[in-house]
Image 1 (cartoon, one colour):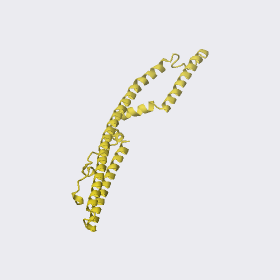
Image 2 (cartoon, one colour):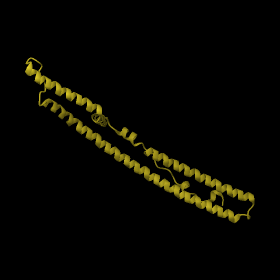
Image 3 (tube, one colour):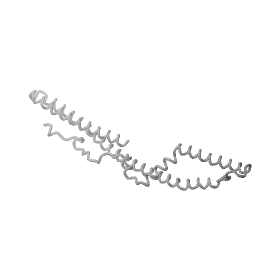
Image 4 (spheres, one colour):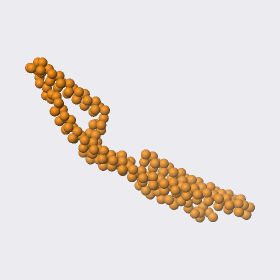
Length: 201
C-alpha cells in the first residue's frame, strides 16, 4: 500500500475553519459611546485616592474657615461673615448634589463592566470549546498514528525476506514520510490551540 493509499488521519481531515480569536477589550472599546467613556472617566476619578485626598482637604478647609469666621464675627463684629456657619447647610447641599450625580454615573459604569465580564466569559467559553475539540482531534490522531505504525511494522515483518531490499526501503520511506506529515499537522494544530489560549488570556 502506497503513501497516498493509506487512510487519512483525524488531523488531516479536520478543518480549522472557526473565526480568529477576538480581543474582547479592543472590541468593547470600539463599541463604547462618548457618554459611556465619560461615565467611565467620572467613575475612575471618583474612585481614586487623589480625588478622596483633594475632597478631604477642601472639606477640612471649608469647615475650618467657616468655623473661624463664625467665632471671629462675635469677637470682631466688622469682620467678614461666614458664608456657611454651623450646621454647614450649604456644604451638605453641595455634597448631596455631588452624590446625586456621581452615584448614578458610577452605577452606569459598573453595569457596563458587568456586561463586559459577561462578554469575556462567553468568549472564554467559545475558545475553551474549540480548544477541547482540537485537543480531541489531536488525541484521536495520535491513536490513528499508533495504529499506522503498528500496521506498518507488522507488514514489514510479514514482507521481510519476501520482497527485494529496495522495495522494502521504499516502503520504509513511505511510512516515515507519512509519520513526518502527520507530526507536522499535529504540531500546527497544537500551535493554533496555544495561540487561541494566549489570545483568550
